[in-house]
Figure: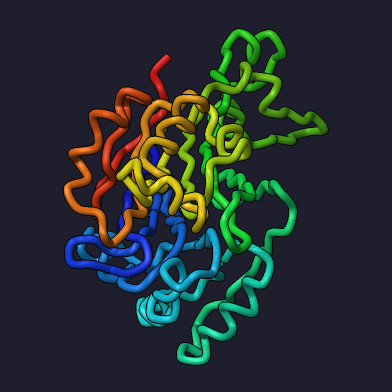
Length: 303
């Protein structure tokens, strides 16, 4: 099971009842965060989640509303007695940007490991997460992220019996472990069927619509996408500043055949966003507004 929490939904500046856009996931005891703007710590505390298990922080880009909350978060993680390494992933320049921010958080009891992105698409596996980073189209280098949890094929008892594999090894093989005993090696592929459908979410903010988004988000269980502007007359402004409207996000969701769309990263000037939803749902029915603290538990589909 993958827990997903949209910690904040604002763009540019935090507002009362609207923290800056940030996402956190929990899977198998490991937390992953995407973006960390001003006030993200408060959003985590309001949700009741904890800081110590955060093992990975991904950054879409380095505008302040997506990273300025990092120094305080790092200090809080240190005060929580974290000692395990923390992995950070983001566009080229990540180590330099974090180094500058750490002027006010210089001493930490854990190592920071950097993974800087430079290619149009990159894949990273860490702590059970399969992370697919894809470049999008903002006025600075910016990436979106798909987070997938793979699922092994079914354990096939008849395969194990036919190959004479001792029953005491079945559980380990079923959980993906290779077993060697008395010169015999047994591998998971000997007893497992084809991989089953896992869980996939895609998160994307600060961009114009791109084919890379459609491709990366394809068949996601949950697509969290920026809708900076809801007013149709602000399309020219979205194009100028390289953001998206509600309707463009819905078009991407429709093309990508996702199961559900949450809109996020709202302009500070946006009020009564719900009044625009009927027209958005004419494009993609399973569209809804993100809100601070919105949470979803995603589980593997029963077969």
